[in-house]
Amino acid sequence: MDSLGDRFNQMTGKTRFVVCRLFLHLAGKEVAPLLGVLNSAARDAIDADGDIQVFGEGLAEICQSLLQYDVYWQSVANEGDVFWDEGEAGDFVEELFTDSAQRYHSGIEVEGLEDPNDVLSIPITQNLIVMLTVAYEGDVPALQTDLSNISALKTALKELINLHYQDRLRAVQVHFSPAQLGDELTSDQLLLHFPELIPL
Amino acid sequence: MNMLRRFFVYVMIFTLAVTTVACGSSSDQVGSSTNYSASRTSTAIPNRLSNGQYPVQQATYNDADGEYTLMLLNTKPGDSSAYRTTDLQMAQLTDEEISKGQKNYLKLENDQASMHIEKDFKIDYVHNVTEEKSNPQTGQTERVIVRQESSFWSPFAGALAGQAIGSLLFRPQYYVPPIYQSGGIFGFGGYGRTYNQSVNIYQERYNAPPAAVRNRQTVRSTGNLRTPYTQRPTTSTQRRTTGTTGFGLTRDRSTGSGYGTNTLRRSSSPRYRQPSSNSFGTSSRSRQPSRSSFGSSSRRRR
Image: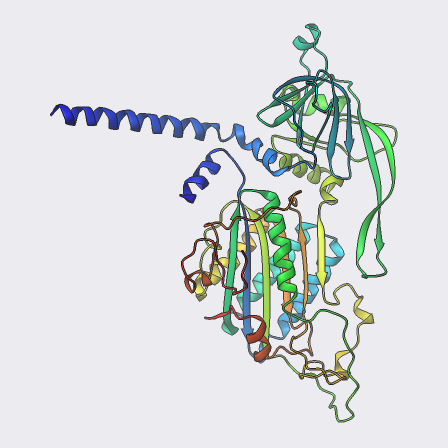
């Protein structure tokens, strides 16, 4: 029934907006270098002040790195929706940002009193979660499915890169936890705040 | 036998009708591709004007949000004479129309507005001078309007206009004003059959989005991404994630950062979002097959 409405909207030449979010959880001591990629992309993006091109480049870079770390992929989740109304899509993007942001601690750091027994070493995180949200025009079947298997996920990440080079991205969001080298994301925290993750 | 023949006739009629409709619509696709911007630009104040032509007395363009305000004549009693829209096509009056004595007019057709104006028509241009200011409370930079300047914009005047697209000027198209100059702007920064196309052309020319688009972009960020890197505490002196902070509080979340940009328009009147069957995701299989819910998250969205 609804697909008939879709067909009709397509025929009348309306633009279709897709908003989708992808969670990717990587596990292993070797994933920490990804934090460098994520943080440098974040700094470039913040400096660019909302230029979708720069955000897209950062996203492409992140996807590229994620693809190279495919051995460490642990679990995944994705969700999304298709809109025929730009306003609704825009609202949904903002909603997803808020939802992604509440899953980690981003407020002012309460500086801990230093423990004299502290050794001069940094804990290396075992887990890393990356949340990518994009909004794009048109239809990308590879992204709009269930991505809970490795080959589907690989195709999806490649499609995300392509979307940038096709200039079809309209909104980009990247969230990651932990924030930097030296912070840890434990498995408990992961279970608690990312219950939707599905093991690969 | 007769029955079968009649049935056959009906089937053929039906098929013919369906294929005719389908062909008609698909060939229309290119032409109507401009229409989507009509649906996506929901103006804040609903214009209650019926289809038709209205003489244009004055036009104003505000570059803060790209909104046109047109003062119209001959509107029906009870209707406002001001027409505000962000979705306006423009065209130059043809020589024929001018020789017939046609003046500047706004044509409304199926929610699509097009303004037909003379070559030297001046649109009042309200330029908003913006500045990046950092909000001391949140630490985030915001773009604020410092002052407004007024100027005028003649989309079809100037050498640029004539050479570039020739006769296309007489067909309604979207135009984006060129970069602001005090003392009048001539020509256009971008044009196209869709609003986005005109923005893209502007962007190619000036390497930056038009003011109206730039002001729509919102950047959000979380974590301490906005703090300069040198000012951040060095991590080697602290163990921040071992479960407790210095005050003995348990930390149930790890740290994280996020950032995002959104160039989509926001809906002017938030609506109850109808759940759609278009949604997709990993967890749709794990839940009951209600068409409304989707995604892997257990967070319930109505």
